[in-house]
Structure formats: structure tokens, C-alpha cells
Length: 423
Image 1 (cartoon, rainbow, N blue to C red):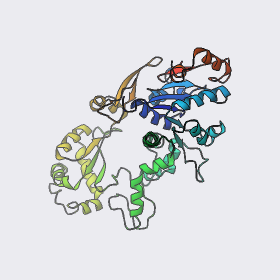
Image 2: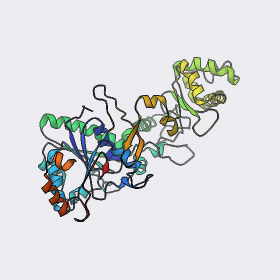
Image 3: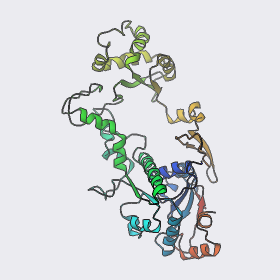
Image 4: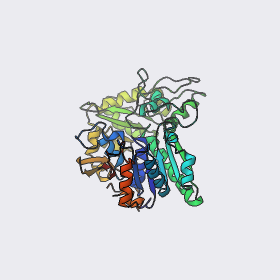
């Protein structure tokens, strides 16, 4: 946890997109102070599975952070925020359009308080353009960023993906931007404003579909199993097609349950060995040389036949057994892994991607681990802000508390939390 040691982040973000970003930076050693309103991040109570404890939604996105609750609608709360800005390298927010400005803290004001600070901002559609004032949500970003229109079966409705590319994908983009701006601020002494719009992030993750959008201007997309033609305009939905230069699809294996599938990519280099292994068992001993399948061009035209034959072959094998057959042939393939599969997978556990935590209220639970592995500073998932960071003495803290700096109303006070659990 040494990579970002000495970097302090004031994290005003909530729900998922921003906390994803700040958690990633906390894993790398940054001191992240989660700055919450008196009622706390909304996800503390959302989908709660343990009474009177922070939800998994909250804890999975906010471990490795310290937390303070501050009433930004009070003058005293604004002063606490101002003092923290002076002590931080990065400040982050994902409020609705104009919220922070209405509290009196525009980017210009924050920059004046600390000229070296980097400010990260997540918006649904950015701070400019006709969509700037629209509200966004995970699936709204997927819809408007191009993901939904290209996901699903061609004859069916568009689908959202279970991967949180709108929220978490945007958080990852912001982390890259913040680290770049922080590096520049270290060199120049001048901070800057870093903005990532959820719609923009989703578009970036869909870049291969925009590649295909332009290819359609010149001809059909021969790797697609559904019909395409020059001038078609929009890229179609194509189920589980690989959408790349090599054919790929999901093969159903025994016992043919919901996740008994193996994704297989049929590369040009492995076709002969694959066809010689599969052909005899599906009644086509000459499968490798069959003119309908002998070349990549013909296999693209007749790919439904390829998948029919491979599915016939897979009827006798589980997804793991089929994987064991194909791996020695150098065929890229992988089983469809359910959440249950992944939570109990030796490879996943060995790479510390499913790690056990001990929460004071929740007890034992698990969290997805740090996906970025740094050899010299491995990440570890592990009173506070006012005294440690701002050096406020007890008299000043009590004065601020009485004035309502940390609560909606002065008599009802909840002050500081550590490690993602509010006291």
C-alpha cells in the first residue's frame, strides 16, 4: 500500500461510480476521507441484509477509507470542508449538476482555497451540452452510451450487461484522470479539474462497436452470424458472437443448466486440430476438409454449422471437461462462471480476488479484491479526521459539534467514523 502513500483524498462521492474510484486509490495507499452528509451515504441502508449494520452495497465500495459526517448547509460545516480542502491533494464529487456550486464551492473557489488540488467530478452527461442537466443511472448510461443497442439477441429487446460499466467503468476512468492530473500538479504546483461523464465512459468501452459502425459504410460484417450489409447504419445485436476477427460463441454443455456453457473461440490456427478432434464424434470424420468449413471465409458464411457441430460434441461433456479437451489443442475457451463458481474458485482465491473482511457490525463477509497487482506495493484490505488531519483540539471539535457542523440539527450529533463504519 505504498504506491500512493502521502496522497490525501477528500471523497464527497456517493453510491457507486465515485466510491469505486476512491476505493481503488485507497487500495494503492492513498488516505481517503469519505465526506458524508449527516444522514450518510444512501447506500449505507440500501439492500441491507443485517439489521442495524451498513449494507454490503456500502461496505464493498468503501472499505479502506476513513469517514466524517459534515453538514455542508451550516457555516461551521463549510469551514470544516474548507480546512480539509487545504490539507488534501484531491477532492472528488459526483453530485447532481450545480449542487456543489449552490453550496458556494465552485471549482474556481476550491482552486483558490488550494491551488495545487486536483478536483475529480463524475456527471451523467458532463457539464456541457444539451444533456448536461439530465439525471443518469447505471442502466441509463448503458442505454445512452451505445452498450444496450448492441447487446442481446437480434430478434429480441436490447439488454443491459450485469457488469457495472456505467458506474464502475466511469470510476475507473476517473482514477486514471486523477492520477494523471496529480502527476502534473506534482510537477507544476497547479491543480486542475478532471471530469468524466458516465455516457462518455460507456462509449469508450464500446469502441469496437464504433469500429464496426464505420466498417458498415464499406461492406458487410462477415464475422457476424446475423445478416449485415453495406450502408446498414447501426451495428446489430448478435447474441454471443465474438464480434472480432475470429469466430466465437457459447457452447451448451451437460447437464445443460443455466450456466453450463463454455465460451469457445475458433482461431484459424487451431481449426485443423479442433475439427479432427470433434469431427469423428459428431459423424463428420472429414470435418477439417469439408469445403463449407475449410477456410475462415467459408466458416464465417457457415458459422451456424460450426456451432451446431460443436454443441453436438459438447452434449457428452461438462463445461470443465470440455475445457480440458480444448486447452491442449490451444483453443481459447472458458466456462461461464457464476457468482457461486467464482466465490469458490481456487484461482480466484489464490489471486486474492475474493477476500474475507471482518466488520465490527456485520461480522465476516467477503469483498472483491484489488484487480491491479503491484509487485512493490501489494494492496491490503484493512479518531480520526478532525484531530489527526486538521489538528483541531477537543474544545474546537465540541464547539463545531454544538453549532451543528456535523449534523442536521445541533442536538443530534454523529461525528466521525473509521474504516467505513460510522460511529
